Length: 288
Image (tube, rainbow, N blue to C red):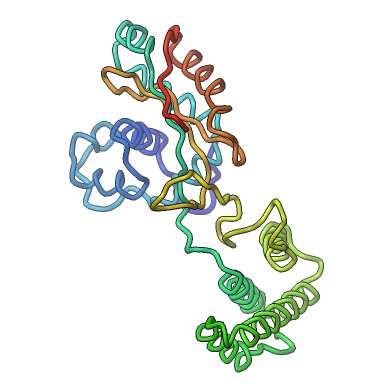
């Protein structure tokens, strides 16, 4: 059900149709919306009557829609994309599948202590401006000087100065955070999650298990896949399955936490059985 106030809603057929096309052609959120503009067949498939010259919606709306319908809803849409193929063909092809586990990288910069602390200060000041809060001190001049020191003090002879500047910047971030929280108290529900992430960034240590690597993507994990050219990746693990001969995607699921690749095989095979109803005789995986 849609409300009668706020922004006009997106037709279910449009967004569900684009999700199907995205899955079928293995495209990203932004790419599939751009392709929609230049393809009249796609526009007709998604319920369009006239040729459209504007984007149907912002690509970020895909994220809000996925959150709304949840994993079960996404599975239903994914099942429809499988049902577009002949059922007998799917049951025949699904006997041999390839299962591949990879990292869906988040759009974040390489995390460093300095970058995270600067993000905390930036977010706190943004909230203060939005809520019309006057900070006791903005520390503008000190922060500018410390950022300059941290950028050019990585040489061994300047390492002591670098550590000192890093600690001072951290103390300033903590002061600004407490100032905003104190003046905003009680904290509105809309800011609870954001303040929780900022606090975790300020108190986390190198050896902690649940480290925040990005303020705007706190769910992202630090994953080592053993690649020589790219030792570390920041994101979440995902598992995909496709038929060996025709390459039809018959399984796709997000993996919670930094799970060992071998432990993702059983739930992936169970998902394939639920979606296709076929019997798997052989699953081909990589050495990882």
